[in-house]
Every structure is written in structure tokens, then in C-alpha cells.
Length: 162
Image 1 (cartoon, one colour):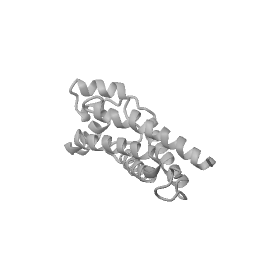
Image 2 (spheres, helix red, strand yellow):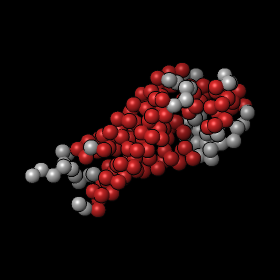
Image 3 (cartoon, helix red, strand yellow):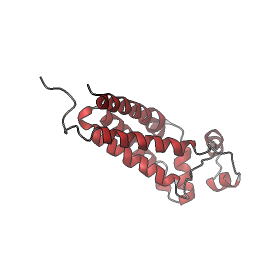
Image 4 (spheres, one colour):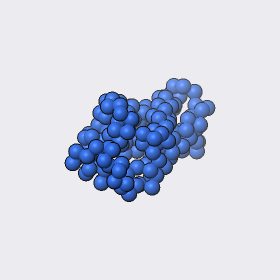
């Protein structure tokens, strides 16, 4: 097995685990409302973001993870992960979310208390310092690296045929 294949496997398994554990499942079974999607919905005025687009995003992240694990679909999984992550980065760069998010623990507590996003924004809570944005950049770098590593693997390859 070449070094590129080993790197592709390692990155794929790591990104798949992160997509499921860090971002995918929490969107489906995590706090309700999800603080990130609640911020986007509150700041944009588009209620569709929370919960419907949150659920769609979570399902997409889990689908990308499953596709990344199977070598024959790894390129499609990396493309899907790249598209979802690029969307997340786009929202971070928009006024609807921002690069630095309010502290998640405080934000969730205030949302559970029934505070509106406008009230929360007026409080000027401490931020995450851009940690979630940097995580999105790392996910994108991993997905693009997988695409690059898989560029020379013919579709349907990955499992040796005897």
C-alpha cells in the first residue's frame, strides 16, 4: 500500500469521525434549538434555518462520513464534505453568523431561557475567538487533501480484485 493510500485512509477515517461526532450527530440529537442555526435564523429572519436546514446539514454530514469510509465512494464523500464545509465557511463570513461566535455554553443557556438573538447580541458575550471557523477551515483542508490524494485512483478502485 503506497503512502498516499495510507494517508487517504487516515484522513478519511479522521474526517468521517469528526463529521459524525463533532458536527453531524449534534445537529440531529443535540440541543434544541441548535445555537449556531438559531443565530443564523435570528439574524437573517429566515426561520427555515432552525430546525429544517440544521437537520438537512446533519444528514449531509453523516452521509459524507459514510461515503468517505468506503474507498469506492471516497471522492464523492470528500466532494460532499467540501461543499458542506464551504457553505459553513460562507456563513461564518456572512453577517448572519460571523467568524467569532458567542461562547456556546452561555449562548445555549440564554436561548433556553427564551432570550431572542437580538437580546443576546446586545449582551456582547465573550467569543470562541474564531475556533469554530478555524475548525471549518481544517475540515475543508482535510476534504480537499483527500480529493487530491484520490485523484489518481480510478473510480471503483480501492478494493483489490483477485
